[in-house]
Length: 277
Ligand SMILES: [Zn+2]
Image: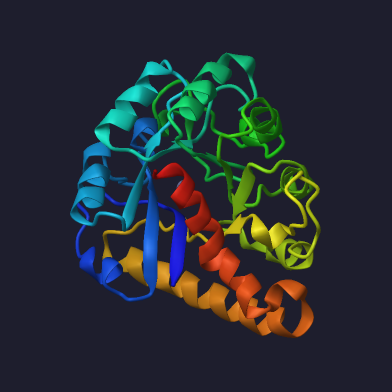
């Protein structure tokens, strides 16, 4: 079984039974980014994401948009509304800007994990989203997560994607911080890097662990809720299962079935058990 730890939902989503009943997916973590008002996609609203989570309890896990233009009280609103986690995307200042720490503190208090987009980001013109956001990736560098992880060691932090072009910063996160994970979705040129780095040891204070203990499978599907999106998501699952099996099992420690399973399921499930209680 698979947990898709970073995905999106389209507006007016349809045929979600096809996903929930495929027999292949245990959970999909749905990231709300409607707060960005991005015009080049038609993402689901908060309401639609919460409705999907309600219709498929325990299957679609809703993450609300962490709007760093608002106040930390908005996080309480999201929690009360039913969001289990948060998604940070396109902030006006770097993630580790001190003015954002009160938001992270609130998320920590409410036991809500935060998935931060890191690295290369879709091009978006200034007038194609709401004001006060950034168009490029400079404020979303993987190294920006380090200070947050140190300040709030109980906070579950997921770096969305692998953070290209700052892959060594991603390695630094995985190596050193017990509470930083990354998902493997997105830019696929960094697959070469991933394959060669999954066997690296962590030194994060939690005993013997390797990078594959901290990588989560994800499609970053844009989007569940329409046929094309579903096709694309299943294609990504096929691709990663085959790639990790055929390359991993012959050449790497992480290719052992139980080690690969951590990426597709165990790592995310362990996190889920922590933030859902
Ligand atoms: Zn995303």
